[in-house]
Length: 530
Image (cartoon, rainbow, N blue to C red; front, side, top):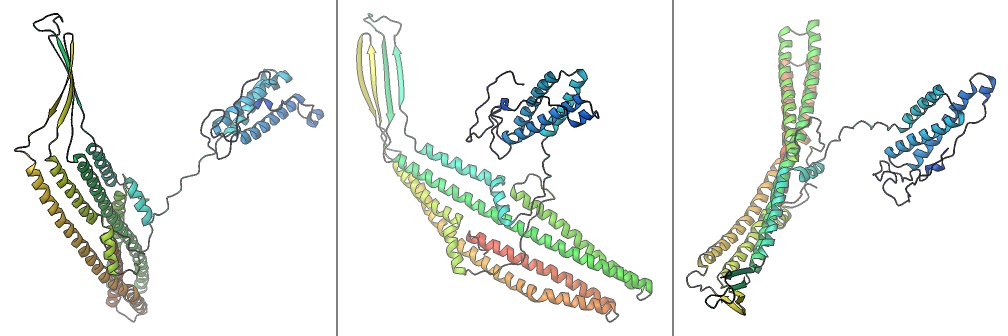
């Protein structure tokens, strides 16, 4: 069936791209894309089938369908096995179908209607083989943990990205600080329109090269100052990261607490709706008065208000957190997961203080500022040194050549950089005092954060271990007593208010513990939460 030879690409096991189109494969398997599709067996018309022999179907039609079936199966198997990318599979499939169709029509000497029938069936088979399955529907993103949120913020927060670029820009100043002085080249000519034989004023040309030579190790101190400035900028960037992490942690905690508050408000609203429904039944039965029912129904407004406020707080907390993550437009589908019960710390205050001194980027920046100031002092002293300028000259006058040199030394009689020397020394002393202040600030921040944590964890433990369970027992007992006529409506409403308030206070206490933990981690520049 194949009367013409055509070159095919050679495919080796190491080939990474498709040998037919040199494109990137879409499947993980290796492609050998029909390295020689000419080797496909020629499918000629076979003898009549039993159906044709019995006269049920025209024998020529049976022969056509059988050959077409063989062609389709062969092409499908070969394409699925050898081709790597879907586009090459489709090309090979359509090409082989057309070739087989031509050979089949030639062997069978089909009429026009037979050709149309075979072409239609081949096209349908090709479409069925080359159809790419639809991608699976996008799944809803899973709730993010705090670590995942921080990872996203470090790569997408525009403020952090801007500060990081500022560090790179500051580091580029080191290149400028390390540059040496460029030489100067000058060329001049005089009386160039006169001939060389003019005895009064022959023409002349001159060229000279000069260069300033720095003394006092100016380049060294410039480099030291630039490198120390880069270190200060990098520490300031790390301090901005530390502040952003604190904001993200606080926003994450606020959203977790808002989710828990919404859950509590939903449970309270559902529970109280059941109470209203039961009271309505008792009202219809004549067990309570209409006034008592209306008082119960009015109390429902507080639970509905709590639910609406909790829902709004969750939306606002989610938007705030997504903003810190660098999300352009907040999405309602955003969700997080975490624990609202605060952990106990095993670290001591002294350990936190030592960690803070070693890791606080603002304190490190203060120490690096002292290094910058010292380098500036040495650079100012070096700037007071005299820098000579040395040059060489070549001159041609008429037919005579000559060479010379020049040395230029400024006389530093009045300006010896006295003002800059004085300023840098005061700046250096100021930097040392700033370092002491930064060190004291570290201890103060850690002590205050530790005190806030102690107070918050004590209150949270009391609520989590005592008050919350007690409020629930009181509410359940009063509710049971009220439904059975043992308590008054006023006692029941008071128990409901106490239960709702205690739960909110317990949630707030847990929130304050987490916020104090985050503040303590911020003060120590170290992750405190175990």
